[in-house]
Length: 172
Ligand code: S3P
Image (cartoon, rainbow, N blue to C red):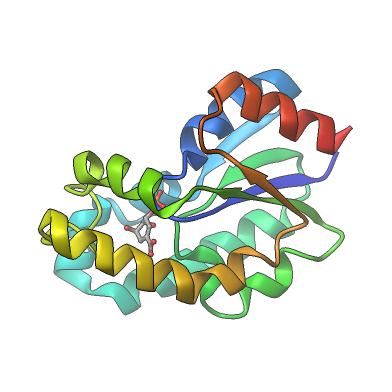
């Protein structure tokens, strides 16, 4: 089994899907943001605040490469920006990994992120009106990178179990 890499915009469900998927596949799960927090000793919010986004991106880069190079099978949930920096999108297509883009619509993302923006430095200070416009533009820019994944799984209106079943089918 190859490394299974989950990509997609903030709020698309990468971490939650990774939990259920890794149980189903009986392989370990690694959450890249969690790894960054452990490695730096800081929360993502504090890391952005104290060290800046560039520092975060460099650490994300190093730890992402470590995980991809380590061939022990795992489900790796990435951060929303991971495929969009340092040519990471090209790694989504190598034979070391199977990558899945969890694709959510703008409305789904806005509705979820209204309540989940506090822990996400890129959107923490946006009002609800600003949030929709920001996500629309940002998603448009990032879609190119997400679409480099081996498979696209639409998540709108599906239960977690349905999403995991669909991914398992694609991996079989
Ligand atoms: C980011 C997404 C976050 C986290 C950081 C930056 C991004 O992860 O890595 O706040 O650039 O989209 P989630 O997608 O898990 O929220």
